[in-house]
Image (tube, rainbow, N blue to C red; front, side, top):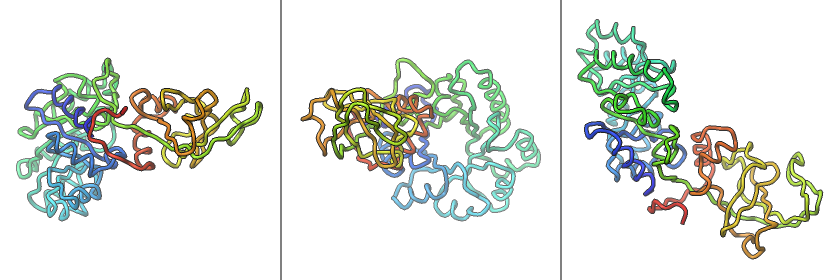
Length: 352
């Protein structure tokens, strides 16, 4: 928890004092536990949380979390009364939702505008039409926001194009506050910060902008238990498909973690685990419940059933695992978080 709070403070120090830092805790806080992570961020000074849907927002409220909560997308046209009764902020994503809001009365809301991602949000022509009809005079958004498509690549011209498009809408809808940058966008510079940044990946230690040296702290340590140890003769296969054959008489350990728990199937035969100062390669295919490691070169006393091995930590991070598997770090984090038992530590040092 301390590492997440430290990452929040790192981002806060990068922006001007007037720029609000909102925390994105959608998808169960990227698989790490919505309520627990939200509380840690609030303790660090965060006063605005973004969630994916109404279910997550109501979970926060039922857990006695009463800070401002904005809901990225969940049918405001159907559930407007619930938003109002629970003090939730809808993100309005289309004209139908804007019309529903206009018809139901005063409601604090954020307006999502499309500037180049081609996902959710009102197009500029729709914003202009609503502006000319007086919609925003009656019910002005508290925040107008958009999302960058290529923020991870600093030199991509799409960033400037989207910023300019957003600036035009921002100028039109003032005094609404503006929010364009998410985690990677923070590193593009002050001209992208406007009045608020929305930080998700960076809070969880993911350096999506590739900043070096990495200013973010890793927040996840993943361990799994050795279930059994066995001898494998030279030439014998290990695992489904016989993708690994022992080139020498070997000792292998069966570890209680598999793709059911979120360990990427594609990292088979590509990574190593660590324990007690030693490294042991993962061999053979990853099964649903199990993974096999080669412990031939590890002292026998260190790897007995019941011992733990470390798959993620300071020396091998979520991003390293994602690179080995050929997937996005966010995908790894959300799947592991959903499949594994969690334990929360207050120290920022995950390697202890």
